[in-house]
Length: 218
Length: 112
Image (cartoon, rainbow over all chains, first blue to last red; front, side, top):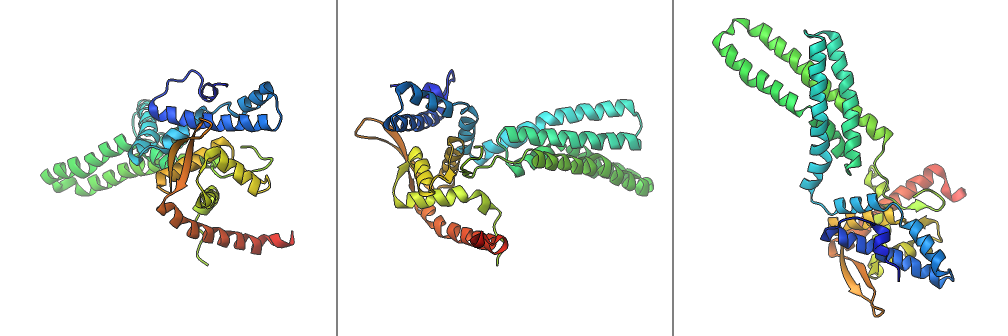
């Protein structure tokens, strides 16, 4: 009898969880093979047909592993990982724009917003590749801003009030400056990241899991 | 009429699988085969869509799975409904009835 396990996952190291998935998919192929044989196909042609069905099951095995995971692990994989990786590039973009335009200008802010749209798109697409659904993808894009948002909020809501408590003389100017920073460094990039994420969701829709109609692609 | 739940569209596989498993326990290949035969070949579940649906339903607690060795010595992983899964059949069927009724009224499927 043929080794259908090797057909499902050739050259893969397997942990117990993956071994069970591979075993089940191999059983499916074995049933398929036996049916072809009952229908009169030769051993070679039946195995060739089953081999075609068993090709490229790697993504399916990954998806099955992820389906069995708990919520926290899914969030770490599909939200935190892509979000933090893209956050690094967001930081690089932010520093580069800050170096090029030393003082805040409209062009610098526009550049940051455009970069945010692109990075939101990347984070969302990355999350999709790691099995993220629409909510995960939106959160992955939002998390890109987490470091910057935390730093800005600490400055605005903690450091600035402490400074103001010493000299209330500059109150009006400082409050408006804080709101301005909050708008351009937190709110605008966040909205841009989410727009980028929604574009990605539109361009690369979530994987359809329903049955396929005869004659359509799987 | 209540606004139809958006998950109804994704739930096509769920209502089909739950209904089949309410009749008897089956393994994955058997489920796929039954769907193809009962729909006269119109609906076909590939491995890449059948097993994720089954695993998702396992995760939700609607199904449970167990390995069994047949008299021919072949090991197969069988699926059966849990109490929770059995409770899902009626609301899912009702949602689909609403959906198909609405579709029929708009697209006049019966006159097609």
